Length: 334
Image (tube, rainbow, N blue to C red):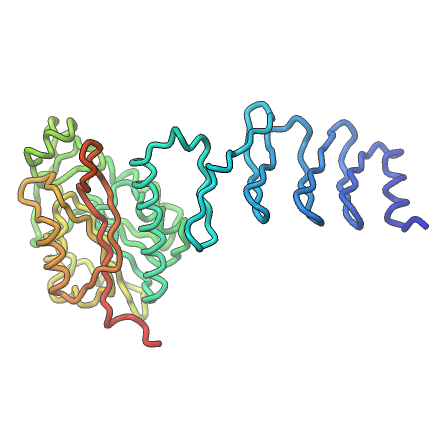
């Protein structure tokens, strides 16, 4: 005996409605003339797609399917060797045509992803509610934190006018993202910064190694900027937070130790920090990785993660690392 549900389904086509029966208790109704295809991917699970449409379902393993756009709607399989399990984490890396993957680019992209995930986890563990983003450029770091799930305050500093305009635009619809047009350093001052080096603008001149590696260093456009001390801007940046728990991120192209020095005794208020440290100097007068890490450790920070940022293609040597450090004594007690 047919159920009332089945009898209603049989009547709908007479009213000009198309019915796609997906199984007991489940059906999709649509206007006639828009045919759909039902693909069962597992018992009790059916994916509905338009016939000839651009999306196809590809099985990855017994519990995972990938919905992907295909050219002209033709099904394209992902080769099994392109599915790489990440240890026992349950995560999979999907690579289309793995033989064409640029290993160096993939490693650096993976390092960037892992760094953001690690930082976000540390922000949560330590209860951070304000991130100081020094050397913000157009807001790339802040956007990554937001995508990774951080919802607390972000205070970004970018000194150059053209880049700051883009940063300000990026932050305009985020009430917890504040932006300041200035650089940070050891002393209050004005200074000339190179503005022709895109994401590598610096207050320092390039080293001989840097000149050999990057052609952009041949340009010499500059802009006068204001430099403030970190301890001088902290009260304003933290205003409105009942119990501030700040984290310091620095990416200032060789100038991070100067920013750090400008925090003075208030560096003790930061539960964690992140600095781009150099194995190979791109800028004259910039500290080595050992010098920078030693200065940070002397103030109570310990390394929790090191992620390569740039690498020499010919030798494999890392040029710079993102060094993430936390103050162990500030960790929540179990």
